[in-house]
Image 1 (cartoon, rainbow, N blue to C red):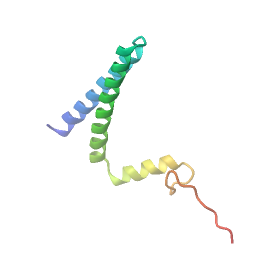
Image 2 (image 1 turned 60 degrees about the vertical axis):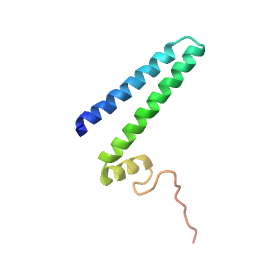
Image 3 (image 1 turned 90 degrees about the horizontal axis):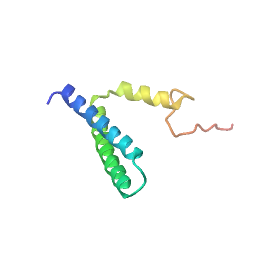
Image 4 (image 1 turned 135 degrees about the horizontal axis):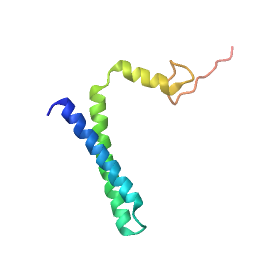
Length: 89
């Protein structure tokens, strides 16, 4: 399978999982809804894993650095989740 066809397949799988989740959320309360939500969640999880693997294969280091910089917003060089510490003299 070519990369383009595989990407399309992954996106179609993701769209189907999203549609299944939307349909499950519309169902009336009960055991059937719970099972439908579980199944839709599993489909979405599997699609997300495939998407993540494919995305990592296509991503470059420069794109990763740009993404990290956009997440920090305070300082372009800071890593997400870390607070800068000021030292007192």
